[in-house]
Image (cartoon, rainbow, N blue to C red):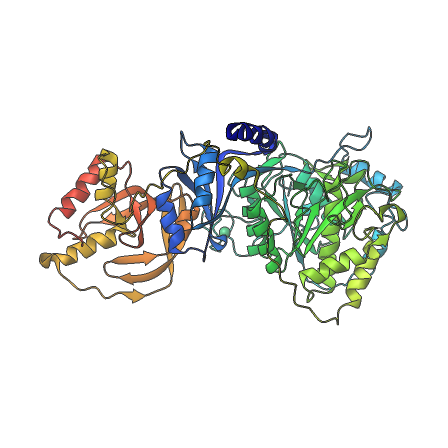
Length: 619
Ligand code: CA
């Protein structure tokens, strides 16, 4: 009987589980407790046999990991969830652009010259310049202040063709003031080398160029909220686009990269983040990232989705995360009715904006019509940026409410979204100006908790019992004692050569323990920069203390880059030096990070053996 129930449960769970869409073998793990705590480090040591670290989100206390060969996703997820130090573990879900359907039959690209003639035909008085919707956008421009303040809008998308003449002639692309171009150095210490105009999280490089069209189209719409991007004359854009690419040319990307992009946006002072993408899987990790953005005063704008479905009953994320500074945007057409494809939801969708037949920039100096909630959201992002410009002291929550409340009530939308209204540029600018003397209010507190009744689909299998999954005992690679005792030759080498960071420091200390070498090195607190080579990159980290014997430093930055480091180690007498590659691990015995020499050249190990043969053993 039990077996039958289990079979039934499996059958019921299967379609739900299969509907999940995640990067094979990749897991996001959130640790309990404070960021960068020793629990997190201990955990890294425990899970070494099963998971490899890809990156760490230090402020979130979260690790992005991948399964080692032969390990089972559901089983490891189950184990992680049983681990008392783990707050949650989830697959690295895949997210997709809220696809811009091509409007009608007009699917071709237009040149800049043609764009000007299109402009002459459209955008008549009282309408949106890039469609015929009655948003009073042109009128709003006359009301904008002439101050010099700029507002940064992050476009988390497929990238942006930052060479498009609309962006170059308006100086609309954000540039990182702390970064010197192409010097191979992370000048501002934000973890990204030469990130002069954003970052490509998809490919892991400094070039956020659009290899689709989606992100460039979105960026044009945002800039177009503040000026005519079709015919010019172009003016200096006070809206700055921060291009953050996490979606590939196929329009899909991973939650881990979306999180990285959101963190980048917040930490590099974007004030609005446009998210014209999504998926159906609830991710606590993505929810946490958006809550962080909210706590830092960032307005979030999300496309409601293009499935013509009700988000109240069939969730679309990130649009459905109820973060207080978020606006979930549906699409309307030129006649102010809900676009045929647009999602809706009286309690989860907040407002609408034009999203049918929107004319905007695409790569290669072209323009094109596109439709989708992907095109509606950026118009609202642009309006939020302009509202911030008028009333920069208001909280993100106040700006969000101001933009929603400035929209026009439309009869047909009353049952489709909470405000029942469509964006209005003129009202937004005027209302923002009227709020110049309004007191900034504290934002309501917000805890990123899962929706009521939510159960992780994977936990159905992972925790369902039925003898399908047995919780394995954690393997303590470096637990309590003198390290691993196993007979594996590689493990033995690793154990013998496990040294606290930095490794040469310990060699020196061992040298000190030997009377022959005894000298006293006083240790001094010195918080300054340290550079370490990791792979082909030079990492800049924070050093804590220094002595004549070595330095100690925070290992987080190293963990963030996958934990593989190249160290230069000097011999105790300082006469010899070797370069050695190793992986950062946590040593319970030493209560410190160490570097494990996994597959080091024999010549290097011979050198170390030579150095240590006369040294006293560390206790
Ligand atoms: Ca940088």
